[in-house]
Image (cartoon, rainbow, N blue to C red; front, top):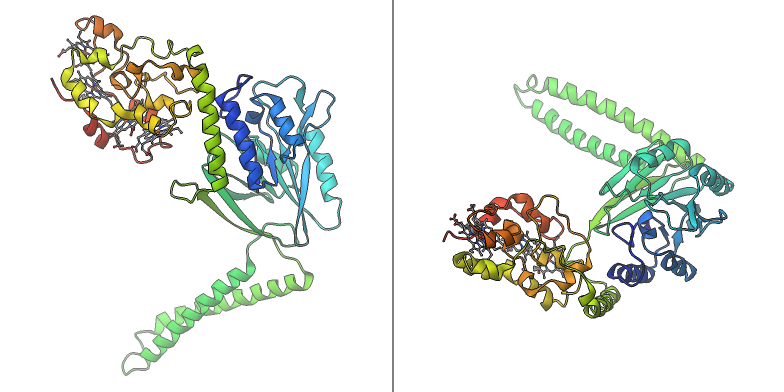
Amino acid sequence: MLDAGNLLYKRTNIHKGPSQERLTAETIIDIYTGLHYDAVGVGPLDLAGSMDLLKNSGDNGFPWISANLADDLDKPLFKQWINRKAGDTDIYITALTAPPGMMPSGIKILKTETVLPKLLKKFTGAKQKPFIILLSTLTNDENRKIVEQYPDINLIIGADRSRSNISPKIFKNCLLTQTEKQGKYQGLLEIIFGTTRQWGMDNSKELADLQNKLGSLNWQLRRLEKKSKLPGQSEKFKTTILRLNNEKEAMSKKIDSLKEIIQQESVSGAANDQFIYRFIRLQKNMPNDQPTVGKLHILNSKIRKLHKNNKQTSQSSKLIEGMAGYPVCETCHEAQFKFWEKSMHASAFMTLVEKNKQYDLDCLPCHLTIDASNSAFTIKTTRGYLSYPVRMQSVGCESCHGPGKSHSLNPDTVSMLRLPDRKTCLTCHSSEHDDNFDYEVKIQNISCPAS
Ligand code: HEC
Ligand code: HEC
Ligand code: HEC
Ligand code: HEC
């Protein structure tokens, strides 16, 4: 069980002290510990909170590794590598941390060319060639450069945030792969270890395939030969039989040479490494891991407690700037209000309350009235959402028509956006929360009636 890193936070620069993000990070560490990960690379996003969480968890046995993260005196902050054994094969796992946007004080990133060669030398010192895995938060392009410079690495598992799943690809003699960020997928990579430490074709599988094909070719030939023996049919199948016989001959030759290769391999004991892989999408209908569910429950009550008590101190004024709230719109647009009132948008906040999630900053924004029609608007994890006034709760009029305070005061001079575009809807109906959103269809369902 490996993770290349960037798992604790979604953004850089998490403010110090208690926060939903900090509580979530602590829970992730707790859950990963329960799942018995072998190694987790430290990514720049893991450094976004305070260093004490990282260091303490590392001291308590959390399997962080990083070859290049060091203190002021160049002393590594975490284990630089671990090893495992699979049959006779020694597996070494190390990790490279990409430089964070803002370096926490007291730590630094050592140069790859100073740390990696030394480690690789240590790993390859043994008689039998080990299998070397690098967990990396560098970009996919940077990983390719590393492959070119350090041919001893057999597998790089990346965490390039600009990419999603990358199916394993052999580049030089290294397999490069990664799974989509934030745990949306798990990657299952099964490796059949050979001895040459080269990635290769599965010769015995190819032999079996060819033998199967030869079998069906023979069957076809026998059938045609039988048919051509019938009176007056001998000319009809002549060319086809000739062609099939040629194919048969070529295939038999291929089979013989493959058999020879396999024979040689078994004598020398040399076989290539092979792999099979699968990306497993984490779906809602999968059975829950009960201990994890329990931990998430505790996290939610911690978040509630934290936010319930500190609600008053948070600032929503900037988020609702220029907005009036639906009761104001109702005064002049009764017909549209009556229509909206019955829609799911109007009960979106209640939906969260029913789930006990009305204090969760990861849920709130899309279940409130936000400036979604503004193309410059992006959803941020901001505590301001906690102190929203009731008139702005749920997906109100201004989520679609834009802020309308000045229109409400001067409807004759200040006009409103009439038809919200697709992008406005997608601010909330993102693929993550609504994976089959069809604008053309859904816009019909929510169009307010004419007065
Ligand atoms: C004081 C009365 C008043 C209030 C309050 C008011 N409106 Fe209007 N609204 C109007 C009038 C008048 C028009 C113009 C109607 C027309 O031209 O047919 C209008 C037009 C609109 C239109 C249609 C724009 C178009 O180009 O066709 C939308 C959308 C709209 N209002 C949304 C809102 C929203 C959202 C609110 C609350 C933030 C709101 N209005 C508050 C009076 C009001
Ligand atoms: C501020 C966020 C937000 C915006 C903007 C938004 N929606 Fe929604 N929408 C929601 C939420 C949240 C729900 C679910 C509410 C619930 O069930 O409590 C929802 C539910 C719906 C539903 C009912 C459920 C379904 O999928 O059939 C439709 C239809 C819909 N939205 C269409 C739209 C369209 C079309 C737009 C753009 C014009 C839009 N929405 C803009 C947040 C938003
Ligand atoms: C990026 C915007 C967004 C965020 C963040 C978000 N939601 Fe929603 N939510 C939606 C939209 C859009 C719908 C309607 C989708 C549909 O009906 O298919 C919805 C529907 C729902 C529903 C009703 C439909 C269902 O799936 O049962 C629930 C419950 C819900 N959300 C809870 C949550 C919770 C809990 C969180 C936080 C963990 C959350 N939402 C965060 C946009 C969001
Ligand atoms: C989910 C998005 C959404 C929400 C929320 C929403 N509307 Fe609309 N509204 C629309 C769409 C779409 C139309 C139809 C535009 C068109 O067909 O040109 C519309 C049309 C209107 C019109 C013009 C009606 C006409 O043809 O004269 C008014 C006024 C209006 N809405 C007011 C409101 C008010 C007031 C609210 C809140 C009580 C509200 N809307 C909530 C999407 C929304």
